[in-house]
Image 1 (tube, rainbow, N blue to C red):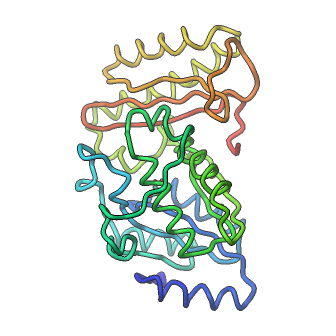
Image 2 (cartoon, rainbow, N blue to C red; image 1 turned 90 degrees about the vertical axis):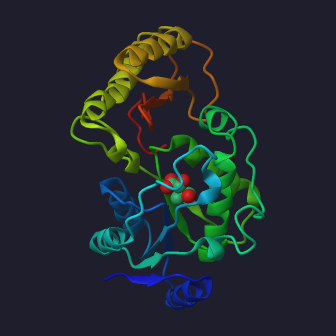
Length: 288
Ligand code: PAF
């Protein structure tokens, strides 16, 4: 059984004990429905700290009005068990009232300009405001020495880095990215994969296949814009409704053309009602 706290007072009391003992504390923020990808983040947290706290909170402010907030899978018992097995020390399981005492609608929002406006931000307006808002609150509640975020949500990682750098928190936080964990066929693990029908699941692998094709074509020096368009056409022909296929620099700026080091490919596409995202570092550097 993992020790579970639900209020900020309980959380802080627990963390104060660890701090008194000189422990370095890692935070792994999650929305629950944990899978092997999340468990690998706990593992990484353990390598970077003495004590690990995971939060499980399905954050209403990062879902758009037509998105899947109410049907987002909630599996608190299995999550607690998985976290205990993964070696997590503490589970923070706050309510909406704990995270947003004035209510989610009245919550002070954090907006990260630039990096949050493109790609996911352009297709999910307000999404990254909600992410930055909840992560800043979690940082203020936990004061972690290190916080772990999966590289699968690459743009989220960049948004959080930007926010952390700019907000001058009173405590130093190392943001450590966790590598994307994939199914044997290459599909990136995601809580949303379970929405896929068996037919959609078979087709879903086309996302990583196309990212690998983009990587190989980019290495030949072919212009990114044409490659992106061809990948959109291939994914559409396979049955996807594509939001974007993008070849970008690590800071998500658009490369001038041709091959250059440090590029990555990013895809967001819908299969039926399920929206999937993935990305691939073309240099194979999974930790940037
Ligand atoms: O990546 C997620 O699961 C969420 O966006 C996060 C970082 C836990 C914030 O709600």
